[in-house]
Image (cartoon, rainbow, N blue to C red; front, side):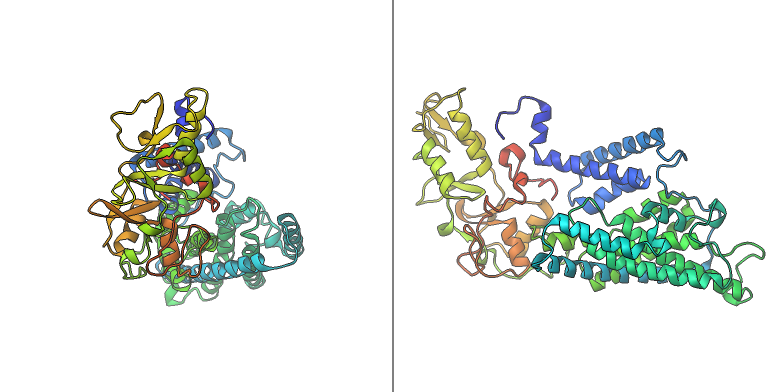
Length: 542
């Protein structure tokens, strides 16, 4: 930041907590207009984006989703009065015997999710290490060409995704034109079923290569399309069986001369199961699908399919697609859903923390502006503990690199115009002159989160997960003993060994993990200290 904020809006932009709230509200609004599901958008934001979701954030997400949906309704882009192109309405219910194929769709969705995630991660690893066809533009052109050559001969693959999903979801009487041949009857359905299954298989392969390219393409709609393809295939298969053996006891609940099976409902259940298998979302998917169809009757089948899909997917691949990519990119994300702590090593935190002798701490006195600027140029850590003196190491607080650099820059600016040789201090100095010295206490977090140096690593991990902390300082009777960052914890949890970059030691006893470096700034905006509440107790999400 280059200048002091001069308005509430500018102030809000630099606060990480506010950024998290804005991101949650934006995601809710996006899902609201993409699927015509305002409530589903709020639940998506709650379930997938954050593990700290206060009432204020929920209210912001709710209002954003509502305004987005109302705006889209007023614009009426499709001239149909519907929020999305593939919004459908069902006129018939389901029968008890259909619970079995609905559960089967849940199994297929879980298998699809696990297979897709493993395949996509293997493709990402191959893409990262390959020595040919380098460059995002070249890769996108090649993938687009291959996709076009494969998709064009197949009518289901050739259709636009939103149009395909609409046709798969819709009941045959509601379609003005059967462009994809889904409303045939008798033996003619056999070829359609085969083509649907083949299209879903090709969709899995192509999506695993496409997801991860540097293009604005997500996974939600492709997953729904693939799930709709195999769901419609199962629905047509059940319909063929019911029409071939209408007197079978299984179909005794069907009324004569009335269509017993609605293949479109199988498509939407299959889409929900595929989406659950890929993202591992549950509640938000059920609500989104309910809002898409407006049929409360089908909530139970969707819930069953989503539940089974998540179980199967978790058994194949513990992480969803988003968590897998977070782990692949090395982002220090700590999943707070491990309630029993079984994956956390049962060791003292002192074994992995950065100990006092390895820390670069700032003493309360004995500094000038120039010496602090020199320290910042020599050490690229993201923050520094503040102690009274190097002998006692009584902890006074913690100051982030951002605050320290900003405070020094502000002191040298024309407003104060202090000399580089001006004394700077971090504790109360009764004889100091505020006009000729620099008090750094307003820029310092004087109440950082601390734990006893004898605390267990499991307790430390729980603090990081539940509070979303960036760092924890370890003390003993108020004396600084060590420090542990979120990324250090991530290294330990994921078994990363070997030497770290400068500023990070190995995981051996006595060294521990050191603080994240400034030059490893995939999350630089996370590090805002008091300006952005870097160590804010409420942690404000991930």
